Length: 173
Ligand SMILES: Nc1ncnc2c1ncn2[C@@H]1O[C@H](COP(=O)(O)OP(=O)(O)OP(=O)(O)O)[C@@H](O)[C@H]1O
Ligand SMILES: Nc1nc2c(c(=O)[nH]1)N=C(CO)CN2
Image (cartoon, rainbow, N blue to C red; front, side, top):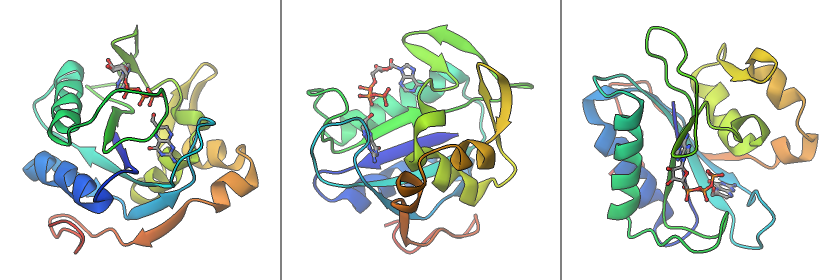
């Protein structure tokens, strides 16, 4: 499961490029959500999506794709959790069972996913029964969302629809 966010430039074009790059390995893509910035840096709202992909890449291979996409969007690494053209994170990898990693280069599941309504809400749209591996074991993402501050969850609003793959949503150009 991948999560992508953008709050600089043509945000929908940046997210669209992610969907295009996943191409034939795309299993599902959420709608586009407007989300208030998470992490305490004052900045514009983000647009976020989540995607499920299935293909021959292993976990480092998915991270490589994320980095390539960020590079293609001329992403500049500046302020942590600050504004960016494109951020693509690997949230979970399943390879005949959930992949766990505490490598700082690729930590799996993504260590902050459970705290982020901008990841969990779009994920729930495309995989309502999903579970996320936490320190306390696997937890349904619906339960993780219910544990977040209500106003944080309510502020994550879908502005453009998803579509049933193999059709792509209209915003994918
Ligand atoms: N699951 C993961 N997905 C993406 N990057 C990861 C993951 N785990 C570790 N990283 C590492 O994190 C580094 C910094 O990533 P990045 O600059 O995108 O962080 P960030 O988006 O500011 O913060 P966050 O990781 O909280 O979303 C990457 O170079 C990557 O090696
Ligand atoms: N709403 C939202 N907030 C963020 C996002 C993001 O994609 N969406 N990405 C960040 C970088 O890690 C920091 N904060």
